[in-house]
Length: 220
Image 1: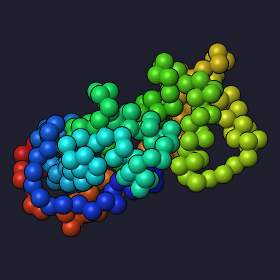
Image 2 (image 1 turned 90 degrees about the vertical axis):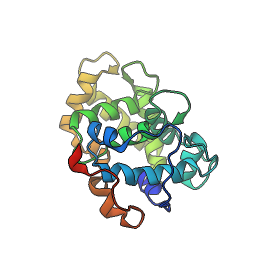
Image 3 (image 1 turned 135 degrees about the horizontal axis):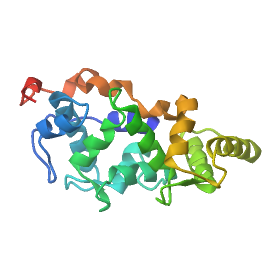
């Protein structure tokens, strides 16, 4: 996903200083697919993102937008949905623990069921527990915009109609979680972007900003 590549492309500081809302790497590593070293690497990324506009140890939506688009004023439904899902407490900011746990879903070793569930929530714009046709269309348009792809209205309508008709097996005009799971099982490319290979070992991907681990991974 280009949005996460943009996040990872930031410059990282080696300075050790804990922000508000900080959670111990050992705790986060025990609850996610990440190792302690990888959580510490993510903390360096988090510090950079959370201080880009307001240095408060929390990622504001404007900082999230700035990291994605290099422009705090560019809005995108896809980016808004990602931010909302990362903001588990729904208090308008992303804390370090939320950041790591949410990114954990994109780890290659994360359960497929978690990826499917996250993708469902991404499309469930109204948070009703169902995906309606208009919600699917809105997300398709947002994803095309995020990918800088331009398709005619007719082609977009064809994609939405075909996808919704195939997924809505009960024919009730909405897609529930059971139907979504079945639809994804037949179309696994739908969650292809839910797996980011370089999250498997961030300390190798970004060795320049990761020093020695404070707590050995073997201690978990």
